[in-house]
Length: 448
Image 1 (cartoon, helix red, strand yellow):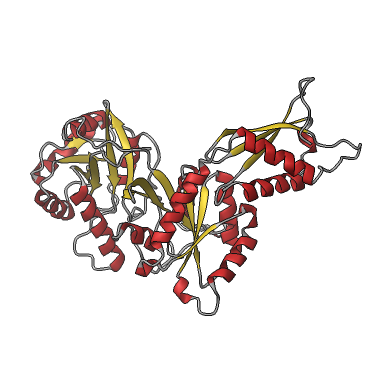
Image 2: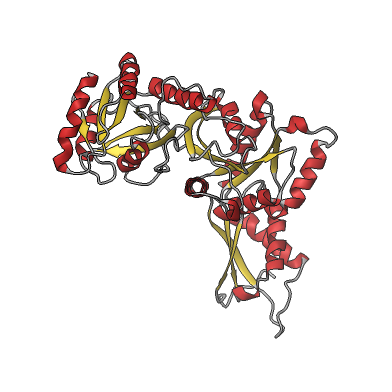
C-alpha cells in the first residue's frame, strides 16, 4: 500500500451530514464506521482513493462544531483543522435534506480562509427530483454545489470528476515505497493513541482519559528513520461478551480489519495491570493473523519494585507460544522508550520477511530429528521427513515433505519450531510449519 506522496483531500462538515458514508462511497468500500448517532467519527481516517487514473489520499474527519468547549469536541475540531491545513483540496459536505444552517455558514468562513479549492457536496439528495434542494447552498459563496446521495450513489461520478480536476497535475506526487504497516492494539485505555502521538511527535490522534475514545482504525503515513510507515491506531479490544453496542461492534471489526493488513502489531499493555487474560487473547489473534509483534509495556513509570528482566521473564512465559519476543518499556505521555520501540518494530518487520536457505534449513531439521526421534503411532509407524523448504515469507512458512502428515503430532511440531527459533533469528514473528505427504524417489533417503 502506498500513499505517502499523494495529494490529500479532506472531507469536512458539521456532525451527522453523512461524511463517513460519503467517504465509504468514494472509496467504493466500507472503511469508516457509519452510525445514525452524531459524533461517531472522532479521529482523522485516511485511505487511498482512485478515480479516472488518478490516486489521492482521502481524509475523513470528525464533525466541526464551532464554540463547543467540551474537551473531546475541542480535540475533534483540532484534528479537522489539521486535516484542512495538510490537504490540497477540501470536500465540504452539507445536508441537502435539512438545508443551509448557521453552522454550515461558520464552517464555510473557515474553509474560505484556508485558501484551498473547496467543493460543496449537498448530501442526502436521494432522488433525482430533489436536486433543486441543493441550490440554496450557492449562498455559501463556494461555487456550484454538487447534489449527491452517498447512500444511493447518485452524483458521485460528477463529484469525483470535479475533485480530481482540482488536484495538482499528475506526476507531481513524490514516489513512495510500500510502507511498513504497524497496528497498535490492546485493551481499552492502555495508551495506544498516546503512543501513536509520541511516535509522530504531535497530537495526531485523539487522547481522552475515558476508555473508548478511539472508535475507528486511524491510518497515519510517515517516514521514520528513512523508512515509510503506516501507523494504525485502533479501538480497544474487549472480550466479546462485553461488547455492548453497535458502534463498539463495528469498532471491533475495524480493529480486526487493521490487524489483517498489518505487517507488525504493537501489543500495548498497561504496566500497572500486567499481562491479563485479554492481552494473551489479543497476542493469539496477532499470531493467527500472521503479523509480527512487539510488546510495548506502557506506563512503565508506574513500576516500582519489578525489574525489566523480571517483566521479560513473565511476558515470555505468558506469551510463550510466540517464542522470543521484542519487549519495550514505554511512557507514552513523556515520549520515553519510543525510539527503542520503533527500532524493535523495524527489526521484527525484517524478521517476518526472513528466508532461510534450503541447505541450512535441511541440516537443522535433520539434526532435530536425530536429536529427538518422532513418536510412533499405535501401529508403530513413525514420521519420516524427506526434505524441507521455505516457499514463502511474511510470515515465514516451512513445508516438510513427509511420509504421512498425520504422524506430525502437536508436541513434535512445537519441538521442531523451538529448534528453528533457537537456530535462526525468528524473533517476534509467527512461524507456519506445514507437513505435506509425498512418496520419496527410490534414491532418496529420509532425514530421520
